[in-house]
Image 1: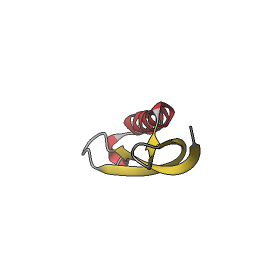
Image 2: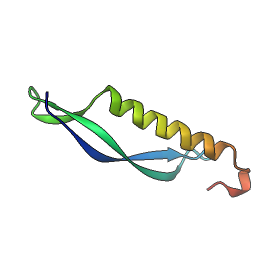
Image 3: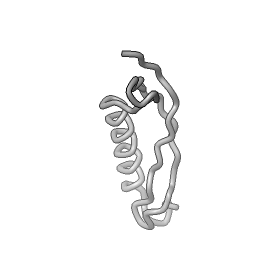
Length: 69
């Protein structure tokens, strides 16, 4: 199976307004899907995205409300 690494932008929501607060760029692995003829996110990519979102969301949750966007 062909694979490559690419940059992906993870969107982090506000803990108060649920609007977008932060955009975090991460490197994720992509897998080539020969049936669809396109690069797809695999399990590892989804794990990286969710872990990044959770880490930044938790970091924002710890800040006082006055400091959050």
